[in-house]
Image (cartoon, rainbow, N blue to C red; front, top):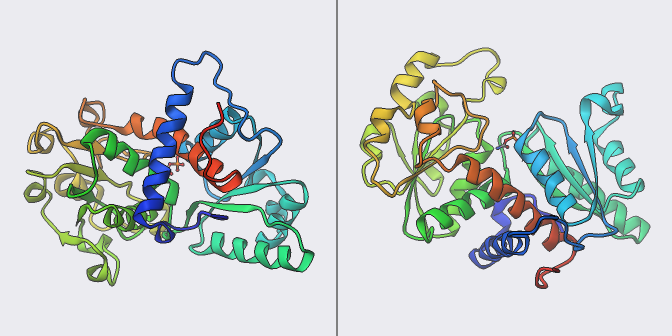
Length: 318
Ligand code: CP
């Protein structure tokens, strides 16, 4: 596998290999005072973020550093992007400067696929290897490493993902996390339910491999997991319907709603959380919540992704 652009490229076997690989990295690091594996020594990994991020950018940086890669972070605001340099020129420049992998977040859906296409074309013309391109979130389209780390968290909490009922709640319309999770959870054999106001459901959602519902209260009993999504105000051009108050009343995960879940059910949120609107603080900090476990798994999953793309499918180098 050269690039990771979408979970649509992962069959169940490949997705499971990523989950297993991430757990092998977790085990390889367990109890180590010095978290440093030689796995990617001599490799250069660059993060290129055209949108803000805490979890994804930091966890890719930690993942690369724990595997001894040289990690360079490029932000659009402090690079020549702010002077008008094109996406193509930026990507080619970073590869010419030595990047073996470019980890890219961009507000435009499809931008990361576009970069991979340019890199492959350039590599063919120059008879050189293209860098690996990893999608760290493109518009409303895909966030594949988020879905993989979520699947890992669900597997750890629930034992298996197959046959489990996973309820995704909130701003499905703008969510690359939802699109990635619906596809991957389906690939892994889960039953997926989407709960959202109609204004935050995309046209064509009936064609997705998921059941659509409107009552959160009705979907919580018997659910194995509930995944709350962030309301993405930055993609709404200043408008948001329903209001924050209506949203919170109808779709927020309150303490009352938490009590509707079965004892073993788990609560996920990709972050950043809007406490008080999407999720009550007492719920976000409750034992059912796996939010910080998701973050930790994000580091191990991104180690697995970098390893698979840059080295291959051998065992973890200790
Ligand atoms: N889940 C997620 O993508 O968070 P960041 O935007 O902080 O990276």
